[in-house]
Image 1 (cartoon, rainbow, N blue to C red):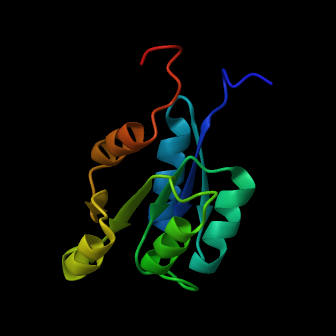
Image 2: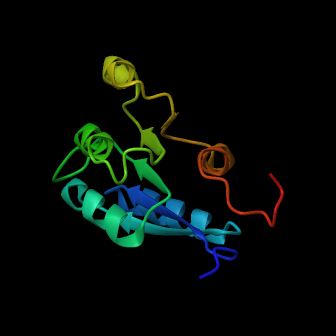
Image 3: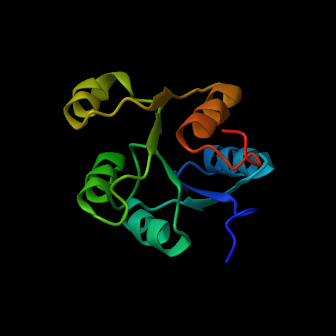
Length: 133
């Protein structure tokens, strides 16, 4: 069981179809990454566990559970609590206190620059670059 060519798995909790598709396709185009979109907040944790996600990208406004509820459940779950979470939201300013009280620093505002977002993905969840650490 070698971990050599294993891709990093990114779960995208996003219910806006064009944005979800853009994120999924862009991350899948990156070397060493594969992504899965989940449009319902209530299903995100289940999918994270099923695919053994390495990174979670969350929108705040989603059906089922909102991004903060999902984040709280991730942090309360011993198996996945250390997984990095990146928030991507149009409403970042109105949630400053929610981010602060949870210690969330990885936030990208919509509309976002795709290169900035992909760089953040690489920082939070580096793909195995063949021994370059």
